[in-house]
Image (cartoon, rainbow, N blue to C red; front, side):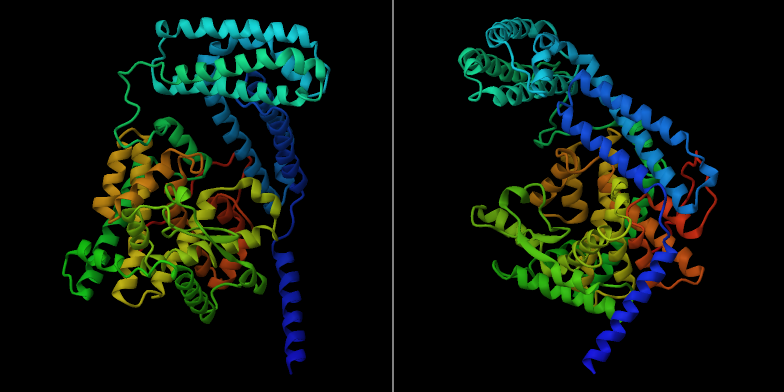
Length: 570
């Protein structure tokens, strides 16, 4: 009987595979997309100083050439899959070109701080082809350049930058030059005796001067411009114009102010639901007191991994009982846990996930207050929303499927698809009554209201309407975060390269898009399982283009965002 069952299961799997292949027909633009990705990778590897005139000019040329290449494609002869790929690639090129140009303009305003580098650029270029340098002549050049750096540093006080952003850009140019010089020097040092003999001392002197110069530049700006609001978190607000362009590149047809209003509406709904759960717990309308009660349901140190496994099993069983999506056996077999370091928890106070789930919980080197905040902020009721977000059907399943279906579309990575999908499942499970107790409801609502707050504070920050400290205060006072966790969230949002400007708002916004699209597909006769499986078989892209693909909507080569996805839901 077991062998017969396995044979039937294998046969069904093969039938599903071939049917899927027929439905999600392949695109002839796969090699075109892959070539673009490979070209970028090759250039980034060769032109690794991203703060140089050479880098900016070469990548400007790359985007111009690729813009011409895709413009020559006959759009009308493409299939729907190919039209979507065309638009995805065209959009990606335009987006990357736009932001490169912004960086290039900033570079050109302060590039004079490194004009002395012209003398050593030939050495840096020739090193890449291994040309043997004239060591004695190079030592004199390095010595001359070091004197030029001295002169630059002496004149700094007379040439203040108008703001800290310009000063920091200038500092980065010098640090990038220092890094490139070190790479070239290390290539010859110890291998070429003559080079080592002549160049060691001049190089060390110049390297030290470049570091000192970069430090001076970083602080060489008019102090009438505020850099740190007292929170210790320094980010770079991009302003309304770049924010609007960023939304267009993500196919979001709403102004920042409209998105803030939508988030505020969702925020109010969450607050009402939290009060209902608070009343169930016996705390009346005092939802903060109820939330404090839930925070104290944390498990003792050392027991968090087992609590996570229990939550994982609950969510997978719940979803499979309702046949909502396909969970491949191998995906269920191969995920694992790791523990997050204390250092990383300063910017990631909660779980992160993908191929593995990284557990945020106290470590021995933390002080007592931080240990308690970590446990309270990661209690099982709060984690009810995040375990499935990070594992199945969230990020782990996304990664698993992305490696198996239309892998070339990884080039079109967007947090609205990646984080929006995981957030959508939080909404979906809430609607299907996955949280049963008031503690579980408060736990899931805490994360739901947090996603709303992310839209509000991140957009207002980039619009110049909120400071980092005000963002921290909002998370503590209006959402119910522990202070250290709120501080880490804001630092992660604005002071790291991990999260681009739209990242934090992408969770709830992407979730709203998936929710609206699912309802459209159900109205067309699809089942939830058909919809969920198909989404993961198409890989990453802005959700408006996924909608055009699933609904076979008319497209043109200059298609712009127009889908006003519904946001009126609970």
